[in-house]
Length: 288
Image 1 (cartoon, rainbow, N blue to C red):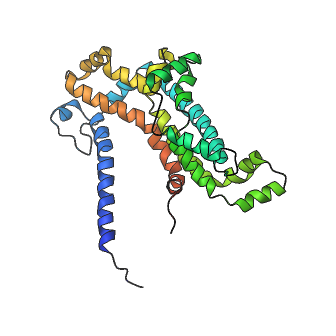
Image 2 (tube, helix red, strand yellow):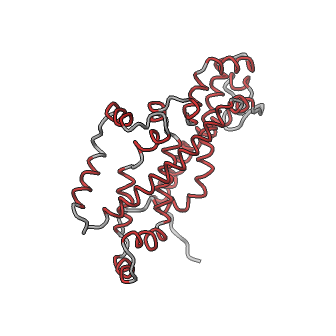
Image 3 (spheres, helix red, strand yellow):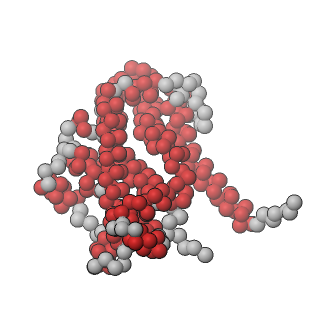
């Protein structure tokens, strides 16, 4: 058995990655510990990595609000619909731009890249949404940010590397461009689809500004808006005070509990997409 030499670079890289993991996980673990600890231990700042005096009353307080479940349902609808629509537009747009023979291909690529540096602004966007008659609807939340220029370019880079020989064989079998995309390209694009889909899903799940601007009916609010109201509403503070008698401690525990409630579903989904995500983030990387 050959002894493998450990280089200084490997040691430094291991230390660096360990450091990144620690500073990434510690805030989440700390918030979870505080939200599950008794108020007296939080008040004395005795909570570190493990909860003290285990209790779930903060989560009961958050989940006791009936609006939470309605907001969860709205958010799931926004995420599923928005991600599907965004993927459909991104896939078709990226596939078209990857074809150099398309008329004005370079022109369209430049126009799309320009949007990464210049935007219309909040007021023109709001006026556009209002003129389309989609205010206070699901489309006001989904359509303005349906396509990410970065994701479009990333997927185009993947399609650029697809072998032209396979496309030619598909044409010989009678497939048109849509058939080539559907039957030949997409079946081998699992990694990029999962990666871009995860990007869109996380962005939609965390969306706050667009619903805040465009939605008026509270019955259509996503989770992020309801959690904000839960934290800022005086009724929530009053209910919490009746539990602990210390508003500062309760506000901190309640804040952390709401954060955990909002990020838990995305964290639960990520492990199932992790293997595709690792492959997808390497798309467009320089190959040696």
